[in-house]
Image (cartoon, rainbow, N blue to C red; front, side, top):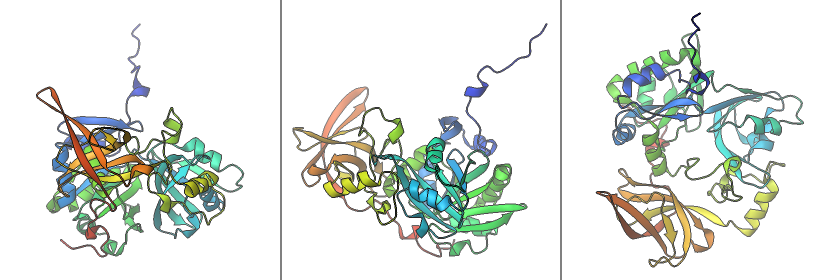
Length: 400
């Protein structure tokens, strides 16, 4: 008797994005990783090439692996107000808001964006699964439904200075009037295409949301319209370069999610990440409110700082000291790079708050021909993001 052949590892293999058939054609390096169980591109050809495509033309980034939750019902806004630190009642319909949610100790569980589609209809998008926590937050509310739509809603991020021109070429009439964090809806193949002026590059950009079954048709429409605008896909490596220039934080790099740390206080609070502007104490109770009030009163132990480091050696994984002689370590670098656009050696770093006004020295190691080299580099704190182009906020965007 011939036994049927089965894949013993079928449940362990990464899921494929609905855009994967098109992405695979571009990924000539076969450079993939996994995000939330999805096969995901690190880069397609070359990370720096893809980065420059985003900064000078436009590119697409697959956001299908993001967790996406639909929250509906007359108690949806009240439930979200108990969950997140921002006041959801201040969020207008067809607008998006960036926010965080915390444990009762005020430690960040995750960050994400809330899309308000109606008075009682929201979609919350984030980087990691949070189903159990959201359902706990909904306890006691009579009319609220939370549905995980991560695998049914496809998302494609279109970023770069020519992104609006591509959407206009697609026939999305009026998209140029959308301001940052606005949502627009357009008919597409008998369904609805949702477009938000959002992104993770700090540049002009949009995110396109469509039912999964229409994903490939959306990809083809975007790339047909973008043919003469230099459109290219870009992966996680180029994304990380762009977001660091914009000063955006990345989970597992700049902050640790509270439920995934082993040691207490190896995670972070909104105030430590300089996200205090997301915390609204004027609204009623929300998770972490008491702890965050106390932290605001006494001050934070740590502060995420933007550093301009002398020289051109990127400082990934470096320890920070208060003197060139390494007398006392006062922090550590979370993200670093030589910025092609800013033309500077930049980094994000967690520094003990009491040392922010003193000298900052970074111990950097670099390998050449299998030999390690060490350099002490002086750093200064930047008060503003490294790169904030006017085109990211200009409405209407420049035409091309």
